[in-house]
Length: 144
Image (cartoon, rainbow, N blue to C red; front, side, top):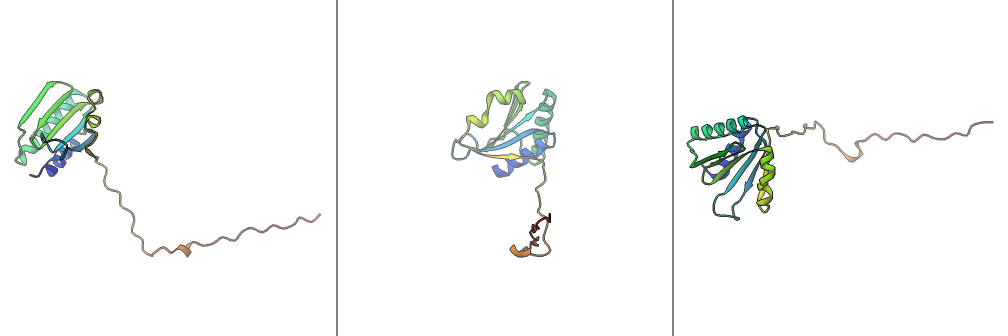
């Protein structure tokens, strides 16, 4: 699986467990250690473990097993898929490490579960003169 598709798949799996503030950092051209970081936040240790399990199991089903897993702390789990490294942080820990600032030259793409907004289709084209002009009120002198 291409690294960009892998990063997007990981982000979607994290969304399935309500991960917050998901970003994909494009590190290609900045480092040779990986192509992408996927960084997300959780509100509790339980949610961190649930997100990590969902990503790990979901990627295994797609034939992509994590090369390395690190969870020495209850506030941060790292899953290394070689071309994509996933960081699942507790909100306060994420603020402390601030990977987005550390890798400030990377292109950042935010991932949300909001559907793309569609603009309603127009049935008739709009012309600049289509607005109806309202007549200006006229002043009349009051009779004394």
